[in-house]
Amino acid sequence: MSSDPSLSSSDKPVTMQVIADRAGVTRALVSMALRNSPKVANATREKIQHLAAELGYKPNPMVRALMSGVRKGYTGTYRATLAFVTNHSTPDYWQGLHTYPEYFRGAVERGRALGYKVEHFWLGEHQSRPARFAEILKARGIPGILIAPLPYRNRVFPLDLSSFTAVTFGYSLADSKVPRVSNHHIQTVQEGVERLCRLGYKHIGFVFSENEIRQVNYMWVAGLHVSRSRFPQLKYSVFDSQVWTQAAFEQWYQREKPEVIVGVNWEVWNWVNELGVSIPDELGFFHLDCHSDGTMSGMCQNTFALGGAAVEMLASLVEDNILYVDEKPRILMLNSDFRPGTTIKASMGVEAGQI
Image (tube, rainbow, N blue to C red):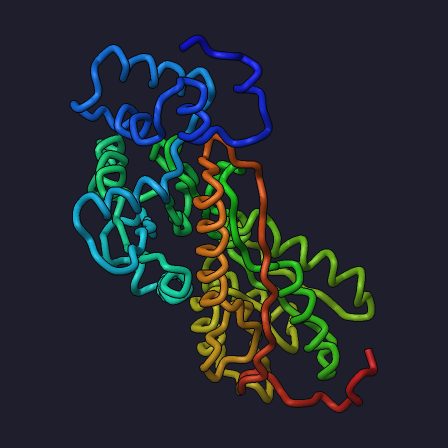
């Protein structure tokens, strides 16, 4: 059973049938040998495994999971499980956040349509032993991981991803090699400014915290830069993100007096409500991550759809047997949708289209 090195450089994937043909044995024997079946003689098993390594064979995790279910006697359509992993201080913390439940709900629904089960896993209880967490996922036959956005100031995911396929949300994860789905933040800001301009607002105030700016890889700032270029006739006031206090915000507002405030932090909305001004008659508020069914004016980031898009990307990579070590950086961005809401005026006295 000598090997031909030229086979390992072929563009075609190495399958068990390729190994069987090269070794002069049946595909079934190759399958048993690669599973360390005791029914295969030690010498034969070692030779087949050595040949598989030389040829660069990589088992498809989807097929492995499917066959695992068949061997265990499962009936009906097998649905591989994908892990939705969070890394906050408690296992349920993410459920009280704005975007995470929508990511998860969208992932679950789209995953079900594609034949996958999406299940939540909390990495927090395995912080000191992340290798144990990886063992649990492997034991469950889980081939792919959806990495939920990481907490502020924690941009490293402590799990060895080398034997998994992975996709993450947004830019909180520092590892740029992991494919990601994200809101198109530049479009979100740009369209938001255009909508406000069309409504007649001439002085716009932007309030972003430093954490929010870094969490999206400075895309909010990039969107503001694009908006300045597209709508130079507007006046822009930007709150100093380095001094994040309500008192500083109130001083900034009294000094700048913008007609509308654009933000992405619900804390800012609370600060606005304590200014003692009438909303939206005296001051408008425009949220860049508002709920699709709420009364807040702003841009809806379609987080439910992002969850579905993340599963689609992950499923495609899993089925193509592309592990983390083989992945190429890629980003899928989805646009936001405008929600008129009730926190901005319907018109500031200009005709639509006069920008």
